[in-house]
Amino acid sequence: MERTFVMIKPDATSRGLIGKVISKLEGENLRVVAMKMLLVDRARAERLYEVHRGKPFYDGLVEYIMSGPVVAMVLEGEDAIAKVRRAIGATDPAKAEPGTIRREFGLSIRENVVHAADSPENARREIEIFFEESEIVGGS
View: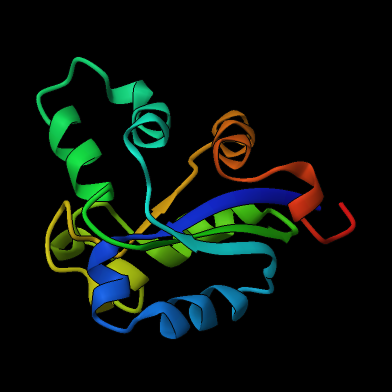
């Protein structure tokens, strides 16, 4: 069993897509073992995107993720990281495969519905930014 971090972004929460996104992820044999809706403060946003610090799009990422409510989740399952990455599709919705979350619901590279960890290391780091171990209910 593997755990990963997924966040439904402000563009998706404002358009009422939370249930649709979760349904698609659960359809990949992934189980939600932690979930919360929150407004991301600057400290969390900067920690989440610290791998992009210094890049031209960094400030925009930080500001955008703080612009409205998000849903942070921990998903668990066999090959969870790879399954999530396949299910969400490419960062640019126009380049994402048909049937993926971003292709179906994404508006732009920034407003692309969902953030997801891309490696086991980032999954652990991102989960720790948003969740205490006691908030995760599941047997991994």
